[in-house]
Image 1: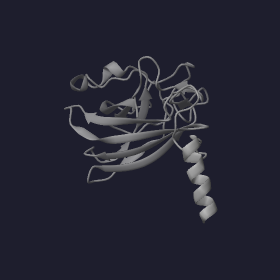
Image 2 (image 1 turned 60 degrees about the vertical axis):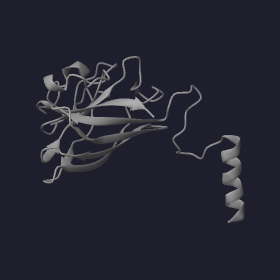
Image 3 (image 1 turned 30 degrees about the vertical axis):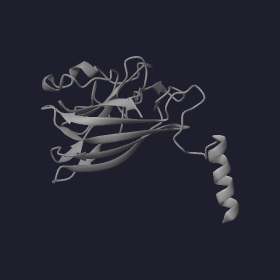
Image 4 (image 1 turned 180 degrees about the vertical axis):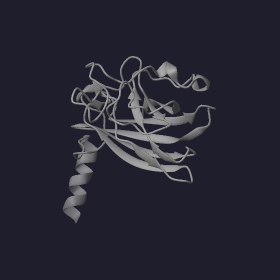
Length: 182
């Protein structure tokens, strides 16, 4: 036990980190980010925590106050949710620098912004964990999320069918969170 403590202490003192920890990489880009979601009325609904790993980005959702049912979520190319009253259109389309087709089941896709659907319970609460191997915070794996104009996570009113263009029939945008480095 004492050996483990000494090794862990010396790693912390020297600035080395254990594999899988969320630290800045060599270029100084953050390995963690957060998005605070608002609905179309500007009310806060919860947050997402993003953690970059060596093969993509893990997203943990913690939401309260959405309508029940399956919902689509995507990474959108511009980091703004300021137009909540107009339905978050300023966040533009999906993060998609490789110009791929939309949809996890599309043979010409998916684009970098695509995720599986998640479920909102009758009480409006949703907790989900998703992984995206096509995007990373610093661009070291796939598309760069934290680029010059940022990115946003956008939740749609319905589930994504993972095939139809451009958003899988997911319907209007009901919540949005700007992804910001932490």
